[in-house]
Length: 296
Image 1 (cartoon, rainbow, N blue to C red):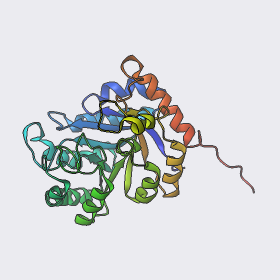
Image 2: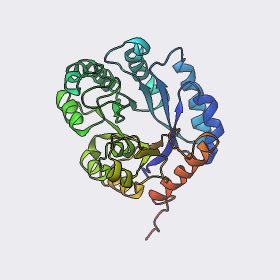
Image 3: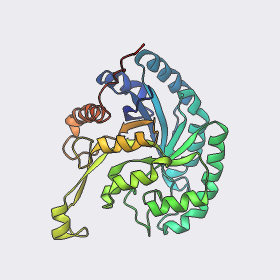
């Protein structure tokens, strides 16, 4: 059965140490992430050790991620574009077909002004990926950016998605979607998911809680917080609906929990929250697979 696997994010540089400590909780997939650069990571050696762990425990690597700004290459992002290329070139060693990350953007310029550079950079990267049988998925985090300015990512608004995919209509580029980042912008994620599901290649397991009473009394520009990132099972979203919509659109990928954001289940409670989310999401997909009886 092509089950939607439930997993979590781990750092690419520490995955070999971390995965053996947590895989027994029941994680079925792992997304390996790098921040701005793969640095001195020996991807071939990491892949070799991950392969041995996969054979022992039966999980999959859902994607390799690089999160920086490949459109500018300034400062700490100087190696981000080259890191995209490295991950695309080494993805087959991890037996994954997705490389993910931020699009980047022209610093503090409106999203419109980033589209030509996006087309130039990811036109080449998408061809590189396509030649290797890979897909590129853009995470939908705004990184505190707006339509008018920011420094990380243009792929956080559905209007931007339309502009991106019109500029670069490649079948192997899509989204690494999660409801949280849309809810932070007060977007209802469910109708959005119905519309965009065919373009979603990977799902991050992250939710949000919106304090509508604060929104209604104080608005969204005052000193009061009105929304919090949450681990699935603690937020506002019904993940049964999300998994249902994904299945209705023939999604057979993974949902990888993005932890380290919940305001309650953090610190020493981090893995408590993540394992709760793991079990919650497994129940939302219907629990364990049960084969039908045979009728001869």
